[in-house]
Amino acid sequence: MNTADSRRLARSLENLGYEPAARTDDADVIVLNTCVVRQSAEDKAIGRLSSLKSLKRQNPQLVISLMGCLVGVHGNPALQKRFPWVDVFSAPSDPQPLLDFLSNRQQADQAQSWRMQIDSMLDEEFGVAVPGEKRAVSENLPVVLGCSHACAYCVIPLKRGRERSRDAQRILRDARTFANQGVREIVLLGQIIDRYGLDIPGSPRLPELLALLSEIPEIKRLRFLTSHPNWMSDDLIASVAELPKVMPHIEVPIQAGDDNILLAMRRGYTNQQYRELVAKLRERIPGVSIATDIIVGFPGETEAAFQKTYDLLADLRLDVAHLARYSPRPGTYSARELPDDVPAEEKMRRFRLLEDLQEGILKELNQGLLGQSASVLFEHRIKGRWYGRTPTNRIVFVDSEEDLTGQERQVKITWTGPWSLVGSLEPKA
Image 1 (spheres, helix red, strand yellow):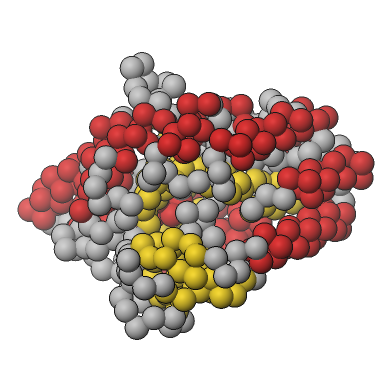
Image 2 (cartoon, helix red, strand yellow; image 1 turned 90 degrees about the vertical axis):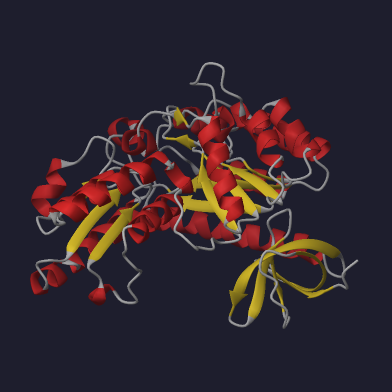
């Protein structure tokens, strides 16, 4: 979501005549877009913000903007006192404060012209276009902003606000703009994306939205994240199974394998219900890949509780496991009411155990792809090799002198590792 917000703001600035700076020291405007979902992310943002003070002292005309979850939807007056060298504070997904600040700095005639452009760009939402721009092959498109679920550990509802679905027609307009600018894959974003449209009377739900987006000829692939086990409906599963452009890859977090921990987390399901969901996905979507999130060291997680998480991951052999160590976030239920009683060293030990387990699982899963053919959508070059992804979201590298940007090609897998695959292009049909 932060990537989508940053790109939207960058394109808005480019529409006003700004260009990306090669170095921070050369910039006229610096925007720090922040995440605070874990303490380490917040610490990194604070450190980077502090380092910009010297640049502001050297160049008082430099504009520094702080954006995102560190500011939050309700603002944060304490930040303004702590970092007086910051000119603009913007909530997540909100470029307007910075654009207004820059507009007010202009001469009257230019400011009036900019004002009209800014109003137009803000109306265009995430599809804001820079003339002549070619976008990335795969682009993120937010469709649900904020979250109202309020898991015990999660700061997102506090920082990004209540759940708000975007209007379907605006989403379709953004998607068509993306398609016209070279995008071939769209990743729909939402904290609980399965709930899309629930808050708008008469709105299409996610299955219907996927069907509408599938009708855009230039778009080859559609993905969506993140799902919640309680909202993964049969209709949505059917959409993934039946719509050719919707990729068979589901991001659906478990967070913990112990029912008491899941209850304390306020997740709303059990270990067994999650296992049944995974079984249903695999039955109805042949070859589906499933990604999950896991938090280790949540308050009250005993060794026995952790073992249930370990056993679940070992049993289900999921394709991706995003792992995190619990850190209390100010304002959340767990930070207020539950003691952070698992030592940091123990959190790291459990983290490493799951990390090693998942690496072994991925080695075996990917090894089964050796010698097989896979459809790969290529995005760009990395260190001389073409980077692309399979429908199940596995990374594939290929050597080729062709320009493969945006091409969907069959690739024979010739090498496998836990995190990526290597292959060779097969002849075009």
